Length: 389
Ligand code: KIV
Ligand code: ZN
Image (tube, rainbow, N blue to C red; front, side, top):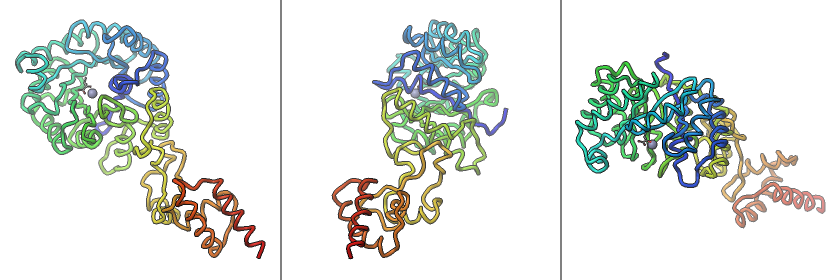
């Protein structure tokens, strides 16, 4: 296995779909799963089979049609969950059961009214049950972000001993700072004796806006799988955004990591997910927001028009975006105005632009954006006034 490949585990259809209003039916899930495979994700978490007959059916159908990606089903550390997940995954070419249990004292005491020793036993048992059905078993230590490292290491070592192939270290509540999450992964890498037998996975939530930063810190510290969603959808403030992680690893080549994602499909995928899940993307969202490649202030526009690298670190084509946009507002400058006029067929001298610019500013002060029809109006009025002299 290539050491520096970072596996992309997409959980849009499971964690992403938990968002109120984003529920998907089976045909929507199938359509998205096929597109995720085309995008190049390594693992598709298709659902939580025991949660409802509909979700069981979705995982079952996705298992039948996905050819290259691993198809994964979520379970609790409960025998029945695992049996049902195995049944839903039985036709998958590469099935994975994702089982686990809360390991922080919050979960152990408040949720399970249990003890660390008891939870450790349940974790081992869950992996053993899953191993009866599939070779590829991922174990999640829910709320690992707030789990004491020494106990977490003990759990991780034990589940790898029981056969887990991937160990997921979720920052379930989005609590960690990047250096803390990175240290947690580094601690496991150093202190879990059999860690070389499993892949460490990052699963970070975005409650403090740190999900992407934490996942990258995890990879730098030794993790080789990122669990993420398209557009960062997920419980509460969301999950790690796939497009951000993929582009960070691609941009920062010096880190030496790569993914199998076809980055030119990121924007089409984002649009499809947004439409299917009825969840608009915020305009300023990195990589896939409608303003991600828009320039509107005069200083930025001037620099961008001289050399796009001055204000853009990513070529929009590389991520399948429509292209860079020069948006005209009252903060725009003369070069942007001349550029936009030229694009719609008007060639003006510098002196002409000086005059039109004064008129442009008056229009711009009354509107949020000066659009193409305004530009035609400005150009025509100017040409008429010049002809009349
Ligand atoms: O956030 C979380 O801890 C999860 C687990 C179920 C993997 O989604
Ligand atoms: Zn989660």
